[in-house]
Image (tube, rainbow, N blue to C red):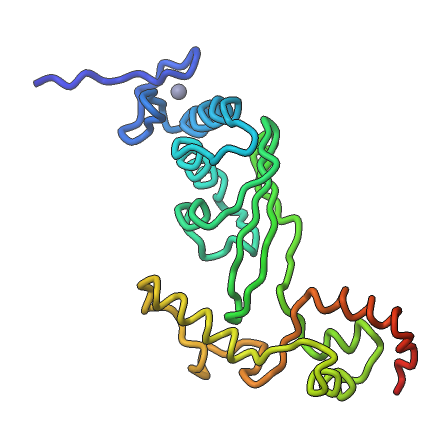
Length: 226
Ligand SMILES: [Zn+2]
């Protein structure tokens, strides 16, 4: 049986279509594939309704577009993630014809942190716009308020400041991974996996910064050198 070669459907192009370069029924040559994905993505964006869940087709095109853009320049917050993992874990917001904003929760050092990105359709690039830790260390908290670390630990042990042991958060993350069938993940108690956060260290929820600075004002705890 003679195989009929399909032609790229990008306007004005007469190249043969690539064997795996189909975008929902339209075939493209490899150089026009990303443009084809982009065109279909823009069509899906036009169909999106405010407050409605994103369609499977939209998420699929988002993944394929990410795949096309993640060439040599990968933002640090997306390192070691496949396009499928990014698609599965990204929370999307501010979707327009120009850009899509999204964030992903990660667990570098086993502690949750959120990375924010902007995917510019116009410029065809993904920029990391913010990094948001969920917890801060005693040293960082002390620096922020002009306290000694000893004073911060005192606030924790006397219940004036909320904190948790790093090991608790790390083990919670590990349990979640096991429950979702990912037994192959790094084990937080294995010393070869330790990063910058010691297991016994206190970690302070990020929200405590605001709460504490407000209670500081209310109760007139001005004597920071104490
Ligand atoms: Zn083409």
